[in-house]
Amino acid sequence: MFNKQSTTVLRKVFLGFKYFSTNVKPKTGIVMLNMGGPERLDQVHDYLFKIMTDRDMIQLPIAQDVLGPWIAKRRTPKVQKMYEEIGGGSPILKWTKLQGKLLCDKLDKESPQTAPHKSYVAFRYVTPFTNDAFTELEKDGVEHAILFSQYPQYSCATAGSSFNEIYRYYKERKFPDHLKLSIIDRWGTHPLLVKCFADLIRKELEQVPEDKKNSVIILFSAHSLPLKTVNRGDAYPSEVGATVQLVMSELNFEYPYQLVWQSKVGPLPWLGPMTDEAIKTYVQQGRKSFIVVPIAFVNEHIETLHELDIDYCKDLAKEVNVDFIRRVPTPNDHPLFIQALSDIVKAHLKRKLPILPKFLTRCPHCVNDNCIDSKQWFSKVCRI
Ligand SMILES: C=CC1=C(C)c2cc3[nH]c(cc4nc(cc5[nH]c(cc1n2)c(C)c5CCC(=O)O)C(CCC(=O)O)=C4C)c(C)c3C=C
Ligand SMILES: [Fe+2]
Ligand SMILES: [Fe+2]
Image (cartoon, rainbow, N blue to C red; front, side, top):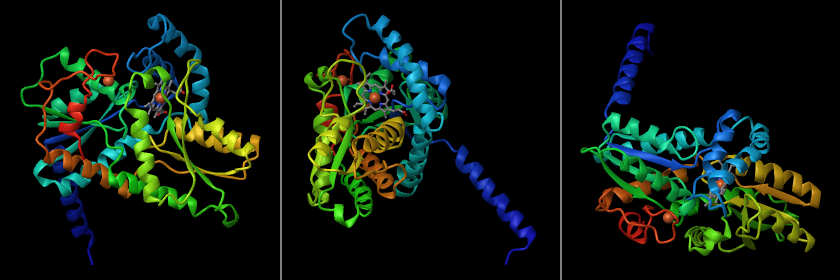
């Protein structure tokens, strides 16, 4: 139908449009907040150093400035080996960029009044850092930046730490006159997130052999927290529980289930029961079939690809003679998940938004004086 000349013209028009559309000033910036993960092995030490010296993340009993770097140095070879075993680095940046892009494409279509939208990745412990994201979005002339925590459930250790970093960033420099900031800090009960998890679980349940369908147990596994953080009143354990409850409700509570915790670091007590201990206990009781669901992560990284897939579903399963075990994928680019992100942002944009830094309040559970999580933020900004 098209000759060579008309194809060339069409291609030029398309590229011209693409050039125009990618160089147009974004009105709304979506700042994808996460701790991040090292893409390369030579980033692992700095990454661990930043985690272990962040007092929002962990409060070591003595001399954190000395003990934190020491733990980071000692842990580096072990963690480098783990990243090597999952392909040489964390895929979290790749996934976060893709999720941000798919979200903005959707928002451009579904919310033309706030378009164009552009996503910016702001990681806490590895590049691109908070200041990289804000330097870029300020340069782009973004009018409204939405600080969107990529952890569905709130913790002072994760989302709180990112918000505190942004607070510190603007404490040190002039807040741009043209910029408005607002926060989405928790969304673990969003109906489409729940539907997405339920859909992913159903697909794995279909793989369970008929003779094991009656005995399979769904293990929801979430990153644990130090008990000290839990006892201070951190919202995360109960918010994770809320997600689990809604997902099970969506599945009509058809299967037995348990919420278990993974990824403990160091010798101090953390919230349990731990995922590996739970598997061992069930096997001892003769329950040997499992579906493992990472319920607090929205994309793949070391805790899913190594700890769940290699350490538990492969090595531990073999060691203790598990009959059947499958790990449910994280939401990644699942259409229901991208629709959830888009609906969350649209609902947020419809509300009368408090604008930073005027509304800064202090988180009641946080070790940091300037934490900007609070029930006030929650009710004003992010009730969905
Ligand atoms: C030191 C204490 C830590 C606390 C508290 C903690 C809480 C916490 N973490 C996540 C999500 C992730 N953590 C990841 C890796 C990771 N976490 C810690 C330490 C704590 N996390 C370390 C030292 C590491 C590095 C790996 C290791 O040494 O084992 C990751 C993976 C990142 C990646 O590979 O891309 C995620 C994701 C949550 C949700 C959470 C509490 C709410
Ligand atoms: Fe962690
Ligand atoms: Fe906090």
